[in-house]
Image (cartoon, rainbow, N blue to C red; front, side, top):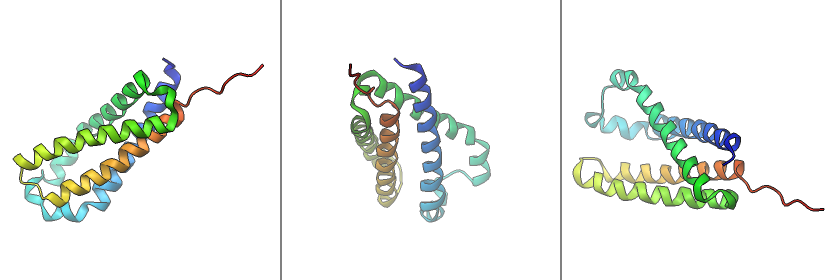
Length: 139
């Protein structure tokens, strides 16, 4: 494993996941969260626990890069996108179970899933570009 590429891919993936999380949840879904306020912690409490969000995003980036590096690394951007799609399909499957057990609006789950596809596809492209196969040597 190329640890330098691994670390750079992790940092790049984390930065994107953090920024996308803010754009998607903090800006694009702001109104739907306001309409469902009774389902969420108060803003002050959420902000006091923000380090858990950062830890979760870092974990997501780390595991994405670990999986990519363990079996997808030779495939470049296309392999990263493929991994991203597969991981988001896994997340959507989990959202089906959440929908059955928690009173979340279906619209929110659909919007989370659309945002999740964007997040995982772009993360895959970023990681795949960093882990791109080395150029063939010619003599």
